[in-house]
Length: 162
Ligand code: 5CA
Image (cartoon, rainbow, N blue to C red; front, side):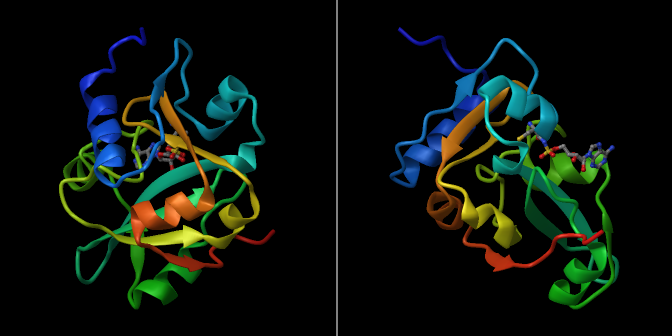
């Protein structure tokens, strides 16, 4: 029998099940707080980790949810262009309010309300991805196609180039 998930991880599992997806949230004994931690724990390339970042429109105050490859940094100028306004990084309280999760465990779904979402096109090249499952030790495996179903996001080139 599988161990019972914590409340936040179960919320993510329920959201996946409600979408008809077969993804399974796993809670590990080691931290998966950062993309590097997560890649080490599951044994994948860091590029296959879905990083969940939250930004805030400086004019509208609206949340912009950004999913990038763990290999990349999101380019704020590209995001601002897509959002149509200047944006800044959200603080921890805004992340909690808009996603319902604490930093380090923000899942791409299971939020209290629908978030305007942008997905890094570099995530689409991998056969499978891993995303945070609601806590800094919870993860689930998914395909890029499942990620687009989950987020209903706009796929764009948002990588910061060196
Ligand atoms: N569980 C891992 C792998 S899926 C995870 O959640 N990684 S993450 O990259 O999606 O989330 C951590 C991110 O939170 C960091 O990349 C960073 O951009 C953001 N972050 C860290 N500290 C803060 C902070 N104080 N305020 C806002 N964002 C933060």
